[in-house]
Image (cartoon, rainbow, N blue to C red; front, side):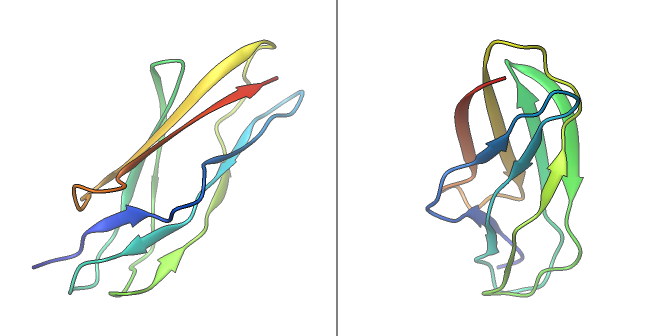
Length: 98
């Protein structure tokens, strides 16, 4: 098969702040080989950044927490998507208020 990734059943965690917003999620390698996950991040439909994991072995995961920078006050939607995804649970969305 190869390395394939899925987000865990939990929600995307968005932690808004006055100077930066952080996000966190739980990700697992559901494939049969070790590999690196690349997670794209969008806010309000605009690409913000990509997070790349260290090597993750099959049946193991990671729970990163990182900044997506300043987000203006108001209501927003965050979206994360993983590559290579398994075709199931490969994206998460969350509305949040700054």
